Image (cartoon, rainbow, N blue to C red; front, side, top):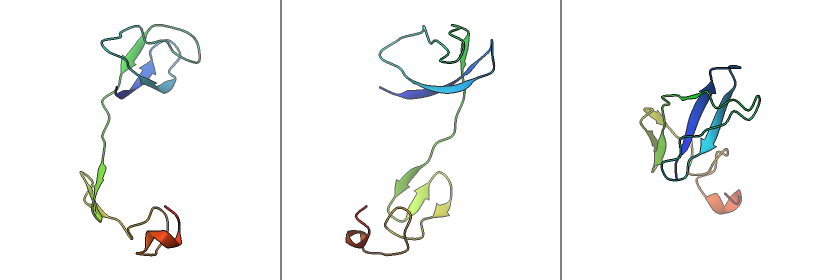
Length: 75
């Protein structure tokens, strides 16, 4: 079940929606309009110490710390 990004063409609100199956009736959470347009979005995933798709290297194994031992930060 993917999460898609949408923009409401009625009010301009950007939002995300978990889409179940082939659902097409996406409602804007701000104004309630069914005039939502799916956005094309970039994504990245972490593969080892490098963020694949972005070319950026992670500073450590842990999320948000500089230690190479994740047991120290409980990540």
